[in-house]
Image (cartoon, rainbow, N blue to C red; front, side, top):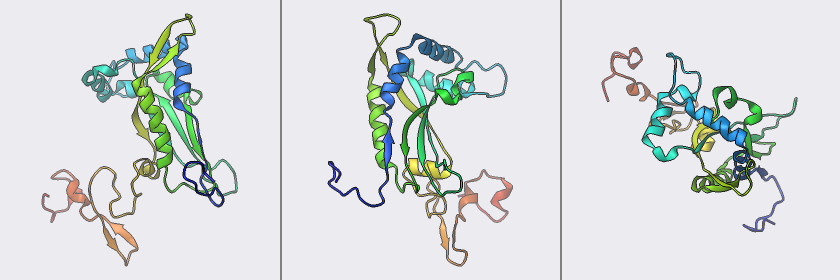
Amino acid sequence: HCPTCGLTRQGNTTVYTHVPLRPQLAGLHADPVWRAAIERGDLLRGRREDEYMRSIHDSPAYADFYQANPTMQGVVLGALSTDGVNPFKGVKYSMWPFMWKILNYPPHLASRTDLMLLVGVVHGPKSPKSIQPVLKLIVEDLIELWNGVPVGDLSEEGVLLTIRACLFLVIGDYPALSKLRLQQEGGSLCGCMFCNLRGESVPVLNTVVYSAGPRMLPLGDPDRGPDRTPP
């Protein structure tokens, strides 16, 4: 039986392996080479040479965020992503790894898979109905990192540093984002995770239709239709 809730562990239960984020980031922050890479990435913020956006450092919203929040200077920003994957061939199996991508890296380092951190895995064989217990453990790590974690400096003995981190982005497809936001997936009456648009069930078609969707488009958009009036 589970020592916390007392329920039996027999039967079809979901197994989750949690890899704490705090010691992983703390170990990286103790390395002066890693801190130098983070500083080089922060120097690129907002310095776009042309109209193309090649990384998050070229995004005006990314630079504006730091200008509006001066206390975020020196904070390690991360992106949490997850999706269901099948590691086996010819077998129906779905496991959900949770990955942490450090956004402060320079562009040539940010997307390297060997620099992404694994913070947990929901084992299969079926997709989890809810990942709220998983998010609870990850949020506990993030709260501790936001408050600051003391770290020793590997280059100088006796020197203590403080690392802070926070979640900046959530990356995933529509089913994954629905699970992360604890919302119903597409096809439900309230399937949109960004607005309060409510659909209408059509039993004949066995589906949900969002007939009020075109009114969210700008005035003059051809998809609104000639007979549609402003909301």
